[in-house]
Length: 427
Image 1 (cartoon, rainbow, N blue to C red):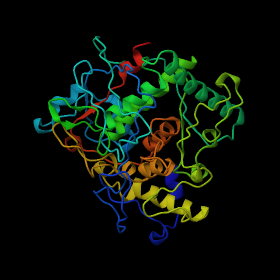
Image 2 (spheres, rainbow, N blue to C red):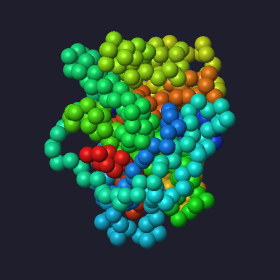
Image 3 (tube, rainbow, N blue to C red):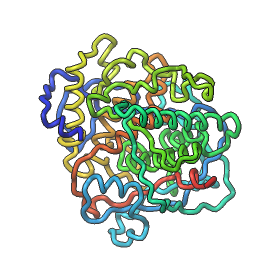
Image 4 (cartoon, rainbow, N blue to C red):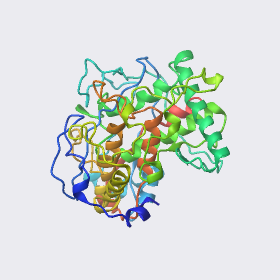
């Protein structure tokens, strides 16, 4: 556990640069440092849209509503946010809390060209049209498989078991390669690389408005929707790759940036070329929109490009110490209750959430996004969003945690999101 390292680490506030107060622009100004209690300090990340502007088809499930039992620890909480508790529990909550954000019906809901969170719209590198075409089909709830298979996710930097590591990397590359090939051969297929990117684009950058509140943008970041959305997203992303490569036991890697050995971008993402003829000598998990100057460096979990110019990087040992201090704050000192960790309440009819993000989302998670992005691009593209490195980054964000008690009434209602039939349509 990273926390065992954190507890033995001496953290000097003055030696590390904190993330900044949440604002409406991707790059922000520097505040004075203070320990956060209820308020999150972090960046606003513009969530990059899909790499192609295809009119690709997305298939969404019926709305499900999620609550939690009276007391669960944080890891069980995150399992719950993945969908263990559903609409059958709604009656036990006060009516004032029974107003979850609901899933739009893609056959009737309007999905606009996205603009939210984009600093330089005219020069954006990625297309912003993420709306899916109508399906004309009734949706069904996805049923979890009963095969009992255990999928062991693996650290992308850890090649200590060379044989197993090589096999895992090749499976991962093959899956991403096949998703990219679908963009060429069947771009409307819901498992294509671009199509999967459009899922996140539509719900992150203001493509949809809320059901029943057409003047209110639907936003899955900056509140308690962050964890459930991304857990479902990665669950189905993993299952899709497994389906494409014919291996139902496939497990995604994760970028273990909270642990010193994993605090650099995993080497598998760095080379542009690949020796495999099957991949046409191109590395399928390479993305050219990266900050090349950061590729050999230790990640900065305090990263703020507006106040940390090139050449101001700390030495490796000090940066690791600072990073461990930030992880400690995200998991312990800034996450003293469920809201501090998961994010604030965001219910139907609420405006776009500002300053409600939980400790992990608002600090280290967002700093990594910005640190990876190419500062020469209009919006810092790709900032690890939606692409291979972005998925393994989010995977690590979602496994961090320690024990915390969550009261049911305070938790209210959450929606389980959007992915069931994106996967099950072809299974």
